[in-house]
Length: 198
Image (cartoon, rainbow, N blue to C red; front, side, top):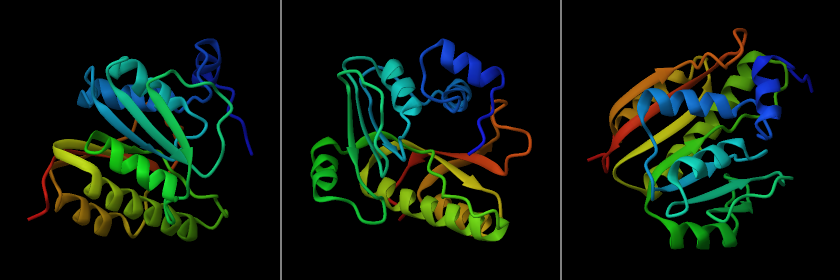
């Protein structure tokens, strides 16, 4: 796996974040004002932990982050973050229990990405499948008026996915952070004002 030792990589290392992706979330939050103290946040695909850390800082000790990933994380999270290993396509009983205890959430966020194959359309389809699963979980667990942030690889399935998102949110907007690499096909969509889709 390539490591991009650019400005954001070095900044993340200096500020003790496990990955440069933290600055993508910080840019998204700066634009859309996602987080407030005391919020409950669900982080899907949390490894290596940067997004959970950034959210935990913004919501403070009165808030909470429930995070999951198939991979383990190596960092020590603060007390307001709970991390569990789980596959979003087959949620573990422990994670289902935690969801039931912690829901409803103010923000559900997903920085999930597939293991890339190098075949563009295959990678895009796998990315879309992860996004669809994240949306299903968000629809189950968000409180009315809440927000959903999701990363997707741009491709032929994008418009269909956005149509599904728009059924559940008053506003759906795309955003490409400056900290995303220029050659990356990723884009983030932010759904605001969750409704029941009726």
